[in-house]
Length: 363
Image (cartoon, rainbow, N blue to C red; front, side, top):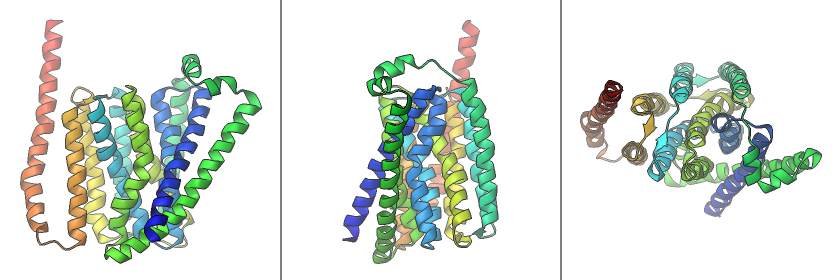
């Protein structure tokens, strides 16, 4: 019964998020903004709705580790899993503005969260700081929207229903879809959080590990579907911006709001401080040299992202089960995999730089 509730909850989250995304996406089309800004705002917010529902419910159930595991695990999965899968479908072109503005925001936000958590707790005051960061980011994106207004008449021709619906009819229909999607998300969160805690107890795994693995992957599926669809259509703007925007909303909105409304402070486990949060920061920082190298994410980069995500999940499971091979894996990572990764990243940067210099010389 527990497993059935988990599956039903996950299905409710995914289907509800799809309806929610469909409604807000139509609002975005109606108002007319660029694909990149859409990905950073309405698409990221819609696909991040499951994380918000899960975290609020977990906080009310006094499951702090599940809250943090959900947020941190989702942010890691968004970059390594979603960009990895999307990059395997087709190489993703990265806009310079994403490297200059959005990636640094994600890095700064991740480091800021780590600093707030260093004392071992996240208090309502910390939540207020995160929400103030959300206000600042919202003001920034507001000016981005005004600056990136585009003519979307062609998009309306592709979306027949949006073209036919107008005025009060358009808003009544899509507000209804949005509310149905939101109701499914909330109910799905209720079932999923309850069953996830039960599964954690049955398997002898901590709530943090369950949040970092099962729940975070489950709640990231809407982002996976959206980014994969965007990649297939060749729309890298939405695929990449959806991931970065979702990471920003996960911390500033989801975690910030959860901390404020939680009945007390959220305790931060030692494992989250020494492994999971630093890894989340490292993943964000690692995007910089890869994105700078030719301003694209090729299939080799995508494979590297997926390899690291698989390795991270395997490490979490082995750590939770107290495997005797954990020490060897740690040594192999720090003395083998990590140096090779750094060599690959910097060699790509040098290669792309030399290619750019040769092109400039020919011109």
